[in-house]
Image: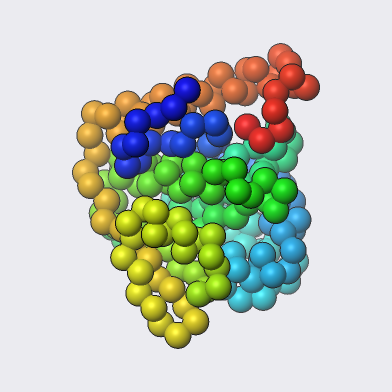
Length: 195
């Protein structure tokens, strides 16, 4: 099934799960699986395993939105942190190397955008290194305004107000999560590993 090309709709093919504090071990495992260069691109600087563990422990699930695409019920293929600022959000995301190039990052970006828009946030920001081609591609595809500052790139996108369509789409995505979870529980080996 495909969705019309409407900003804020989640890309077809991947169910983007909202994550809870119980997902901390899966988030940590996902981030630690990233090679050192991928960690540097994700966080903007080289980071140790201890720094990543501290970051995961400090995730504020009551304030920020945390999403993931599941490889299976116990592992994440992708992870998104939508950090709440004042009237804006900042997005950070990562995808396992084995799952790249299939649209997972785009699906998580669109889900984060939809979440922020429906909660009245007016801006979405991303900060990344110039050599982070994947994030720059997502920013350009989304029509984000990109500001160059040396080796850093800051991208911003003005978010439109919520509409009945955007709210309905988010509700629909929530129903897909429930369906996906039920299917995984009943037939765990019959589903593709990337959903």
